[in-house]
Length: 125
Image (tube, rainbow, N blue to C red):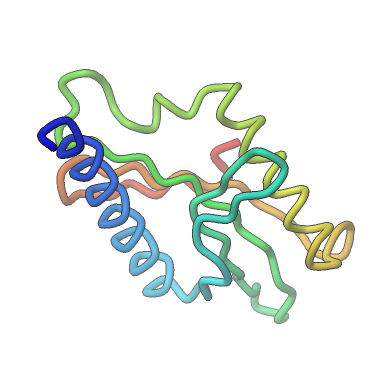
């Protein structure tokens, strides 16, 4: 049983990080549309909608990364080209599934959390 504890702890920490990120997005006026979207063999943590001053929506795909501390580097640094490609793949499948492909503006953000401090990188990739 002890071998399950680290993955359970990591999963719980990941869910807590996603909750923190979702709250930050909502405080900034975004609406959370979906969480943990798994499509086309890839996943995106949060899907949100943001409207500009004219009311035009942008669909925002958010990758959430967290670490207890930054001794091994900032969590944003872990969103490499391979991870970006996977998020884009899930995002594309989501847009097609929701009949939004080529109908809305799209943005990819990263929310990197160190401890309890979140850094929001808009248009990260």
